[in-house]
Length: 135
Ligand SMILES: [Zn+2]
Ligand SMILES: [Zn+2]
Image: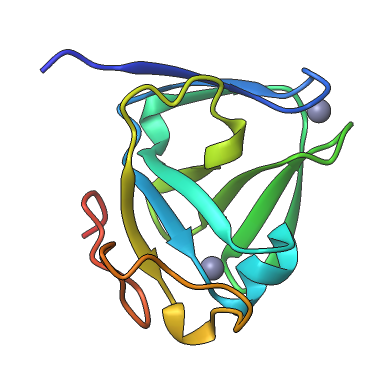
């Protein structure tokens, strides 16, 4: 299968990336993601060797090893990373053209806000879901 290339960028254009073979979109409803994003996290995971990032990122740790990355200039929420994993997640909204990416699953649904509903037809788990590229 040929690699699919994706471009992503922030609001001001200072921070951008090129990535290959993004995963379908995961939605994380955990408390940290909800507070960092203002709602819940929608992101696509990619192997770190398959992404090239340009620009300046400001990282904030929410707990040990887990950090969210924002454009240093405009504050766009663009990345999430667990330091112990070989992957990085890019926010769904930062992807310029998401092509055929679809919903993969919802995780940490136990911590979701009570003011919205998750489509019951979409896969969900109360904690971490199964990951296609982590072992
Ligand atoms: Zn920016
Ligand atoms: Zn989360």
